[in-house]
Length: 367
Image (cartoon, rainbow, N blue to C red; front, side, top):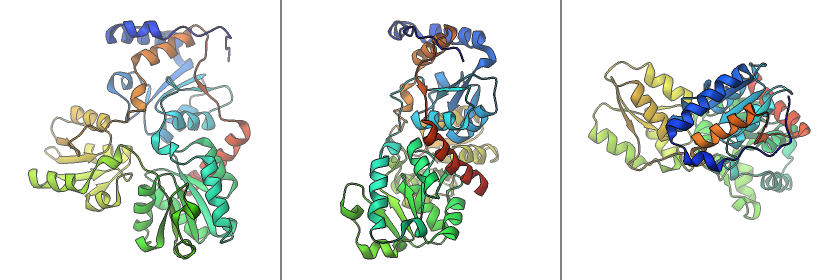
């Protein structure tokens, strides 16, 4: 991979261009780069950027697909930081994972950092043999160093579609699970396995012993991290009730990052891939209220005018951090690549990458 040390081409002048001009320059850069570059577009990405993606999907699917393109020296991930990290973990040594805007993060992923998780592990270790009794599980929506933590402590990673299956594996292996960073996905997934709510404890980082008593910790089968998705947190039980009153016969499908109450009221739960499959395979004339990010819902609405599709919230719920990636940033990255400059590369340190890969491989072997 040839990388120049010269300063990158500037970003600021691109903001003086129209969307049409930027789109033309992106298209030209893509042609120039050919198979050496693959652009990944997450389902929550804004439409004007999403249309330039060579591959679309959820974060793990995209990273795995990109790893199957060895001719692509450059993997441009139009998503958020942890997604580009996964792409770097799964891709080959001659491939560079690139994030168009380094400010595109994930508020949920930021709710659990390595020092806080290590502190929780140490605190739990004062009351029990954690290495023998507790399996750490991190949602794929987390930083690479947390995946590495799970890798070295016998734990694994999960996605929104396989969390219940991963938890089933964990409980067969050890008595308890520590699940981070999304409490809602952990709660509904454990509940589906028959774990009662009273055997779930919420760990609040920063509080002594996570705000729990020794008795609560000993009773808990699963210890949930106090984290959540700011988008899916917006959907409320009242929204489900409202749509059912206004649209008789409507079906409600929500992402399992929604609250336990909303998940319980919904007709179905689904990952980004699962929601799309369910709605696409439904008969013409079907009515749906969908509880996930707005860009995905609008895309489905435009794709299937023969179905009545609603966004399950009266307010706009966008993934604001992913929204940072715009046409100007995508154009900037691609034109720098054409000029031989690799910028905004996401690199996971080798040991961390090895341990995170171990956790990911465990998940793949489970599912």
